[in-house]
Length: 303
Image (cartoon, rainbow, N blue to C red; front, side, top):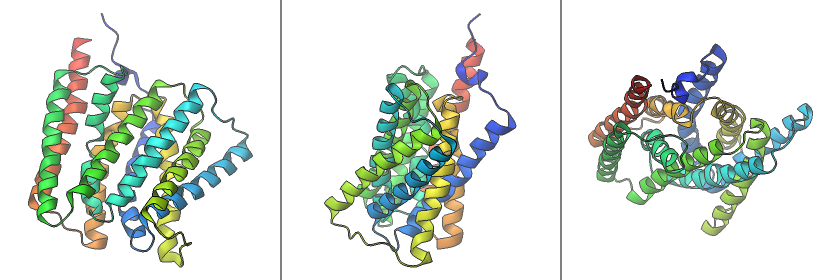
């Protein structure tokens, strides 16, 4: 008899499920926090400040706890993760959310498990089955509807494309990090934060953004919230879980975060989505659910 698939052997204690729930709640609110931050601070400069604050705090924690920094292949993984996820992904997402609602950005980002499944197959991390192929077609068909619905309401397709590309880069970074030896999530994230800050600052300089420090609580709270909750809590939990769960299972948080993001956007900013956007979002979530749960059931049946 074949061994059970990796996700069937994953630990699901209260600690692991609590860490997973924490990533869902925090990331469900980060789309809205980015949107609030963009109201008063240029987007890539805001991302740079967020990463500098988070990186400094993580370095302090590492020093107090005497946590070693990654080296060798683990260091290459941290650098790559920082460049792709906290650098290019953040730059594109922050810039896109200047023009796209937080709920729409979260729905596009919900394709993360689909792109992760395809990239994990390409990098020989996990196998790809026919269910995931069909799910990918359904999910990206939903993205096409989201693009059509938001474009009809005035959202630029370039901004939507930037968010979709940021999703693919986030998927790629997770797959690459999964293939390399694990290190401390604290120091891995610290290294990644400073790499990402350098990338975002370079992009900010290219766009000619002013680099003034924010003034007042209204300008600072999104940056501090995203630094502490987003990087110190959610990303550390994510990297910790990544060494214990499959990258595909961990990406199921994309089924939950869009619901949180759309709800918060509607309640706090009165964000409204078009009919095609809701329909497209439903297709995306249906494709993701099929990719994650039907393919898992098929793998267990084969085992």
